Length: 308
Image (cartoon, rainbow, N blue to C red; front, top):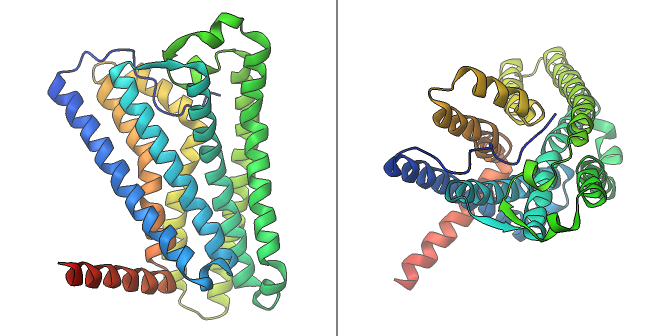
């Protein structure tokens, strides 16, 4: 299995310049917009103690940070792929590794958020004892360790198998060119298949238990159902990370006429869309975050009026 940082566009696009320009501007606009929104959440989080003393918000900000890193770096790689801009192995390797860490972290983080929510709803009296700040930070550390076990072998195998000239060469940066050994494909297939099963089981179990608990407690089961549907939709988008290569093969086989448009849509759906709805599902819909976000925006507006 070969999860890429961005879709593998050919070295040079035969598309008209106007179309290429439109796609690049759209991706750049989406990237800047998502980054600004995520940055506003990070700013609100850092300014108010109520957030960094709550495990739920710590996991949310960790998700937002990973999303922001992923969007920034994949947009850079996307723009460079259209220009066929070649960079050295060392720079490409750093970009790809950081991008892959952020990519691998996200589904794991979402699963941890589902577990935290499950404990809060199903075991409210034990939540404060189980979900402490220390345990949350340890959990985030475990997420990074698990991501590293998936990503770093690509680097080690490449260092051990490629000739010295390879590390001094320049090429268009993507995962395939940076880590070309075919044995890595089997490794990724096994690890991602395991992660896919574990995360999907976690998501299904926790969300359905939350739904049944809400119904049994005579709470607003409709609201709980709608929340689970929204979370499930986002998780489904995030999980396309693990089946991206198969989807990409389908695009290459069945959409040859509109190949570039199909790959562009693939990039937007797999890499941009999930990161654009995270602030809505986990941020704006949260009453506390929404209140402080509005307050922060009002403060900025008042400062701008006073300065003008």
